[in-house]
Amino acid sequence: MDNNEILIQGLDLPVQIGVPDDERAGWQVLNADIAITPRLAFEQMQDQISATINYQAVTDAVKALATSRPRHLIETLVVEIAALIINEFAALSVTVTLRKRILPGTDNVAVRIVRTAEP
Image 1 (cartoon, one colour):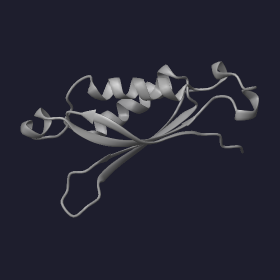
Image 2: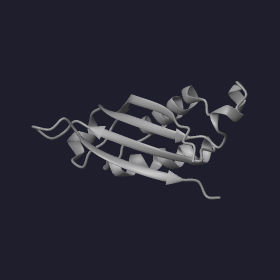
Image 3: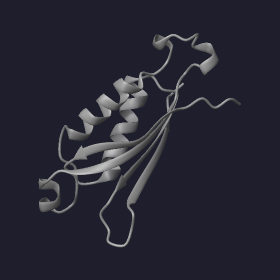
Image 4: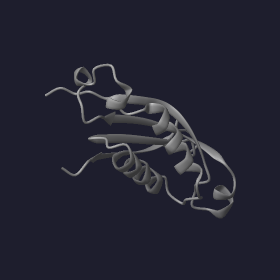
């Protein structure tokens, strides 16, 4: 089976996120990797932007979602991002990884979600 993915890597997302009120009160930056499987294989797109998923539109929508409201959990945001991409961009599937630099002695804490569109 062919695997055609559009990869958005290292996307910085300004957010208000965290369990303590003081952490959530300020802005921090999460980092995201997004792998999107479009409904058409690349060779079926015939060099037409209308046949693919516009990655600029995806990044704009994900940034708008991330900044739209404060959240407690990165788990909440990763679910919302995956749903946005499946529902608004008609992706066949999506994998989203969110990284947060929070714990001393670690590069980051990450969550990952994989979602597939309903047939």
